[in-house]
Amino acid sequence: MDHVPCQYQVRRTGRFTSHANVVSDARLWRQGPVCWSASKRSWIDPRQPDADQGKRADAGPVGCCIQCNTSCSLQLHSVYSPGHPWHMIGGAMDLGERPWDAGVRECREETGLTAAGPPRLLATVFGQPRAQRPYSTLQLIFDGGRLTDEQIRGITLNPREHDEARVLPLAEWEALMPARDFVRLRAVEEARRTGVAAYVDTWGNA
View: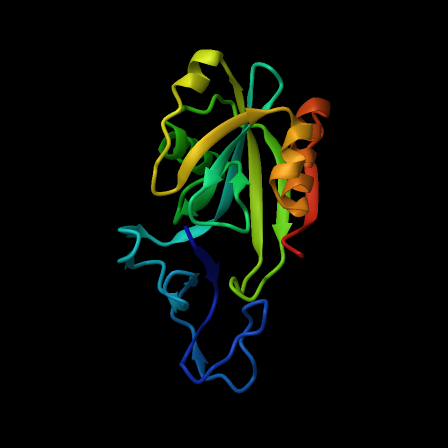
């Protein structure tokens, strides 16, 4: 899921800064919102169906962090992101979708599980633009509840996205993921423990 909204659309002669603002020599006009598609490497109209995804363009990332009944963290192993091999359940919101609803949907699509409500925000995570992703991201990470042993055994993965699920204590995840990913996970688990939502603005800087 790879789209982010932007207010402006430009002709092909235009250029974008790292924050997706149009520079002065671009010939631009307002035609409603546009989105950057990482798969297409171009800006698309989010009001039109996305041919690659078979659905409307996404509006932003949302995460749903789930904790099992032994105070361990559930992480999924990605088949498409070597830079982030293990990560939380999550993805991008569909156009018009609410963040919590997106997290529940992603949880169901990626694991077959139903996240328990009511919504409780654990962390807001800001990611800087990077060369392969020329826009900032803002992740909203929710508490998805605690899992029973039976629920863990019943996890069903989508093989197009993940090939393994693990439930481990926080300390054991540090050696399995990049430092910035572990900082995010540690902040989320601390927020769950203390009840105070975390704010992380260094994720993606490296």
